[in-house]
Length: 476
Image (cartoon, rainbow, N blue to C red; front, top):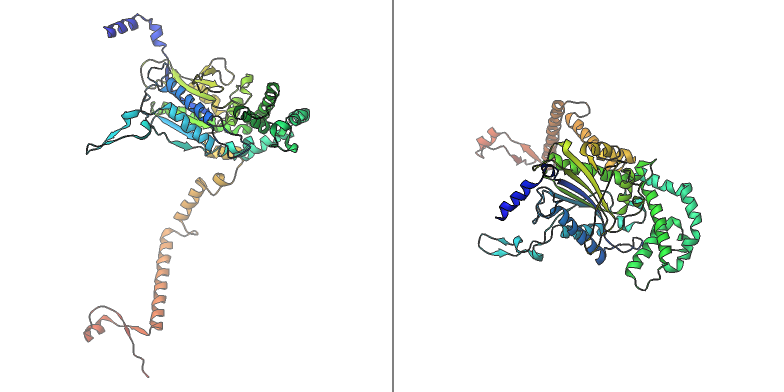
């Protein structure tokens, strides 16, 4: 009876409502790490608060994308036990960021209890540890290694041109003006810092370090001498100004190399969802605030002042592939749109909210897939060679002796040897080998006073038919 009632209710819906039912085909999440200790006092460590922030944010995304009852459930994704073919997660080699990723993934796919137990052929049961804890591997991304132990934004980019561009900011008129106009403010917080910053370092040049130290203390140190809320807000505004200008400059896009790289990875992952017929469904990358700032600038989001400051711990930005096409599976590309969502921060209560924002100066919050591809390609880095060229790097992975040039060199040496054909080189090699063997034989004869005896001679002496080296008695 209940089934009949449900069918009647569906039948009573207007056809337009049925046709417009939205489906989420896949998603890419870029997630900032959780609360940590100060960057200027390495090694930075994820706090218990930060672990909880990430776990609860992962649980939020479970309820949004994984739960079968969610209206934003990703089409066909496993709703209880993780299918590793459907999900990919990555993070740089950084303790704070990687542990944040592990906490997030625990919330995304919680333990499944006894369902994880295994019965062997002999009838014995293997009980899964940690109540069926689900393991999701984290792969490495190249940029961002040890980023939470470095206070300078470009310190881990390894991109020469990006580092030069960011350093140029320290010679700009806007930087010099703020450096001069804020000197008294930074000198006034010397007692609050309790000697953690030298007197010569109390300036706008260390805007992020000073704010970060005080911010961490305001969260975790009950006995700390924290400046007033007004001063803390002013310090935050200045730190935001400094870090945004180090991460983005409209006339020097390479300064935003972290955002360019992320854009290429997002493009590749979402395209894989489409071309694989939906086999790849959810990608998650964990990182630091610098990548957010870089992408905000490149994607034309900074007309909104909310996108000109550092996102707080646990912040998320997401790109969703959506369609209104009925049925299942991946529809025609012309029926696929991209929606960008962002949330500045998280909550240990799990009340994270995402808000959609238009990209690339558009007015609509959804953009056709083909338009998203064309707009993203204008600034995205999609290959190693493109990265090397944009960064002006010529060593390491960008060395001319590595990669394709090395392969070509090897191939060339295989096909010839100083201009000789392989056949000629082979004959010469064989002759050299025979010459060496003959030389060694002569040396043995001389040193051990030996001589070669013919088989026929040995046969006539009744000493067998095998050639051998026999001693020669010296004649005196």
